[in-house]
Every structure is written in C-alpha cells, then in structure tokens.
Picture (cartoon, each protein chain N blue to C red):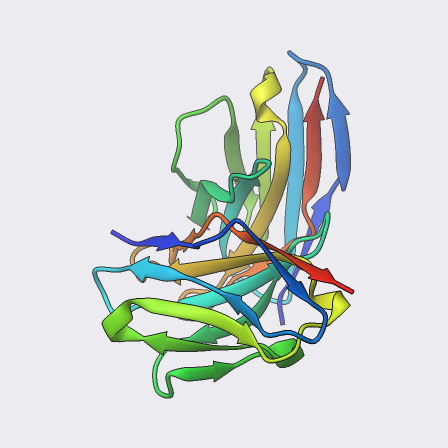
Length: 114
Length: 112
C-alpha cells in the first residue's frame, strides 16, 4: 500500500531564506513521486515529479526535490523563498495499479515572512 | 494538453438539498477521472474514480455518488447534503500510461 507523510503542517520562512518541505513515503512498488502546489481557492498545479533516472528533479518556480530511496524521502527545496511561494504544498505517490491513483500527503502550508 | 473545467466555483446549499457538480475534460479522450474532496486541514481524500463511461469506483462510503455519462464528463451528486459534505471538491484527470494528474480549479461547497 502507498502512503505519504508530510512533516509539519505549517512552515514559515523569511523571504530569501531556504525553503525545505519534508515528505516521506511508503510504497510496495518503485514509486512515482510528485509535488503539487495549491494557491487559495484554486486547483493543484504540478511543481515537479520523479519517475525514473536522475534522483534530483528540478521543477517550476526554482523548486527542486531529491529522491532518496534509502531514506524513502522526497523533500522539496528552494534556495531562496519569495513572497509568491506562499501556498499549500502537497506531496503525492502514484499507485501504478488500476485507475492510476495518487495518494496525497495532508499538505504543508508555507508562509513567507517579509 | 488536457484542460479541466469545473463548475460552479462556489456553492452554498442548505442541509438536505441535492447537489450536482460537473467536470468536463478537453484535449484528450478516454481519460481516467477522479473526484477529490479537500476538507479544512485534512488534505486530499479520493472519493471516486472512473476509467471509462459508466465505470465508477468508490473509495469511501459516504453520502455522495458519481456518474460518468460521457467519456469526458464526470458528475458528483448527492440526494441530500449533510453539513459534513462541506469542503473543496477537485476534479482531476490523467491518461493511462501518462504520469501525473491535471486538476480542475475546484468547487468550494458550503452546506449551511
């Protein structure tokens, strides 16, 4: 069974500081891993995804994440936070079975302090 | 690329009233379609998914139902809304073999 744990439901960083959002997963098959961002009252937008190959994945808006199999982690980082990064972030693992379902973490709300 | 249209964007309904939320997909055929609910502080819960016309799988027993009358149309319904049905409802789409979801813009439902 697949599951995702996001440590920290709320994270606050100062503008210009490093952003680190944590995600750990469990999966019975090689995982496909994703980070989505959600701005208030909007749908989810794909930030980046890992399927195979290079374990460091670069996404939109300067975000990147590294797949670490030994740690079952897929933490999201950005070197320098911008005010526009304030949003809800969801980590997800894909179920490669019928229906191609995703399993989402409970989300991390990022606040950027000016 | 796929585009998902959801409506309405916001909805306020009294307890006991019916519900119908519609989701349509453009730019693809035979997609897998999903309804998620996002309750405050509780992340995303998969409610239903469909791999084809008339094929609905329910993930959680509840007061809601789903239907897929056409290839690119997915409808979420209820006969009698409960207060606990309040939340943000998201429709999502993916293609078999294509990795990643496309999400609609969501419907904010408030049951009063």
